[in-house]
Image (cartoon, rainbow, N blue to C red; front, side):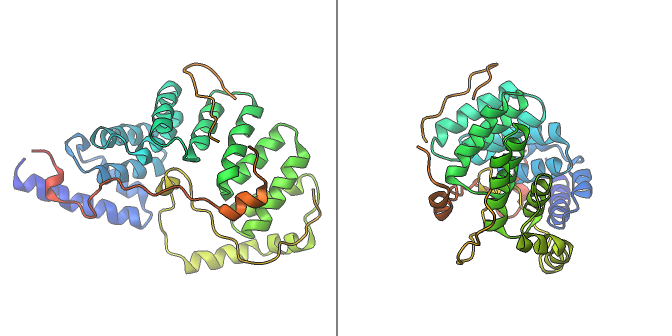
Length: 293
């Protein structure tokens, strides 16, 4: 490749990454479409391009580019986790199971395995009880708003109203505000009224969300920044309000088959374990040498 081609690559990728940082994923994807990613060796760049396509719901493109990164960085559980999720989104459940098995071998104690298991079970239309079991296992190690709300919805789907309301109250209590808190409030209201303090927070939700939008920059928050799960905020130290109440032994997934130490919630919440961060061995800035000759 001549110097002109390399310079063109550098200019385009810099513009693409700037658009990505600004949240302009559609424009970033248009630039990404102009580059032959099979010639790029930088795994970090390939992972970013995959994320751009995923943000645009162009899952086949995201999956294809991330597979290129995987070939250059085998053994990265961050990439494997995302490949498993993208395989599910593209309907390649058997491939998702293969990636799940790889993830278990590389990180047998990483709680994000339960999220991958849940996604596969969901895609397989497995019994809701098995899906609930996967998220309950995840909750023993991590308490994340998104998956807590997903668990509450599964309880609703299974007709487990008491468990659904309890999960909604737990989510509201520990996270106080945010999109999943308000969704949990709306889910709870289908069955019983909110408490006075919950109702006050719900009534002010648009005001709070508006303040957050003004104060916070548009940043990337994709779950795989934590090997597949978003960071759980640490609750402020305060006595929980009393609202009107409402391991390692993993069954391996087998291709084309559907699958299905209890820890108190308080103890799990105190731990708030966070998956280990893993480097993709990526370069911080795109270099002309990213391109194969």
